[in-house]
Image (cartoon, rainbow, N blue to C red; front, side):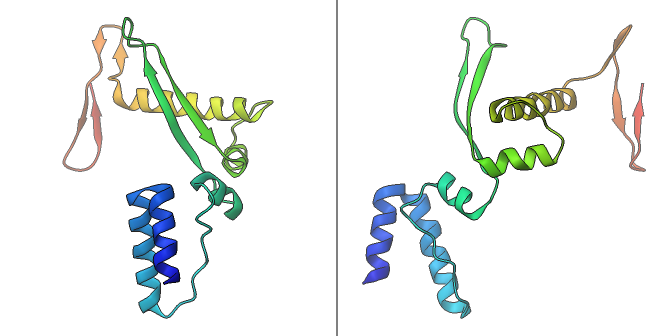
Length: 138
């Protein structure tokens, strides 16, 4: 009865995916014979990650300018362990927002540089993967 009530509360509060994940975890643990760490279903995903000291970040919203699609924004949410992890990996700033902005800028630039063909003075540089695993640039 207790598990059913707990599952119904999870379904009502967080929706079907969370319900399915909690139910699957409970069933795995019932048959594994291991003691489980109790998850407080009254906590949000961010609150639970913070409580556990786990870095957490999520994209809350995106917006693209319809008139000029190269402009837009991502709205992010994060916890303190995420910022601490970024600082440990060399990202800096005077505030948590600046640290996350630094990380996000580097992330976007890395993705762009990996997805955009290189250019030389005369045109686009071509990268070709060879069968021996090496890359030929011409």
